[in-house]
Image (cartoon, rainbow, N blue to C red; front, side, top):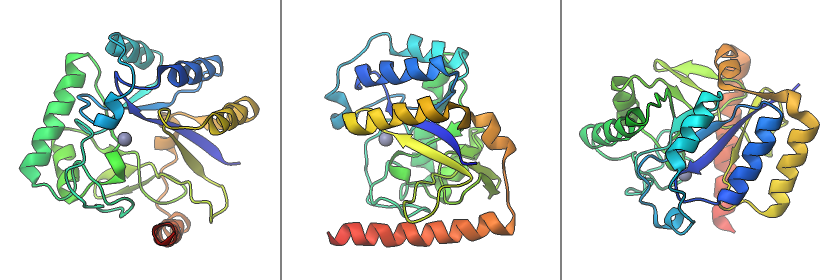
Length: 243
Ligand SMILES: [Zn+2]
């Protein structure tokens, strides 16, 4: 039976708080522990348009204490290169293409902000899914070795990292652990309602990060799906670009 791992992106002081509060209440009702991908020093103009909540860090601390996983969603969420990185998903990046030193500085500054808030993240969630070998090296030097991204149907290990794949390819059947990547700032009411319905009906199928880490699988079957998913995702992006 397919399992779902919920990842909420672009979590920062400026966001669609109504959607956030609504979803968190539903997750708390069902004891579902999502990954909150937090931008520690948001400077993204698109995100800054949303209302600011001064109590942001105390809310995140409280959710962290309740078992929600806090991920490092970059440093400032400002795209400064057109490099799609190792995964080749989107041609925008806060990291890929920068020098190791530049990336290392950003990651150190990001983590320092979390530590100042007594939050000790172990997961990296690259903005725009874009990171390269230098990003991985900089993360390793900052003791982060879990990446919430990649292709496949189950978490896998590679280059000393554990990848929790971002598996949502509509060309492929639903199986394994499917990451549901939710953008609460831009989600339509229709899609938000569909998510609430999915949670109400299948709440027992939602898993936390500890479940994902125990499900690491490097066998042939998962490696095969990594290749299939990578190829079909590329095809979908090419088709979308032609529209
Ligand atoms: Zn983002």
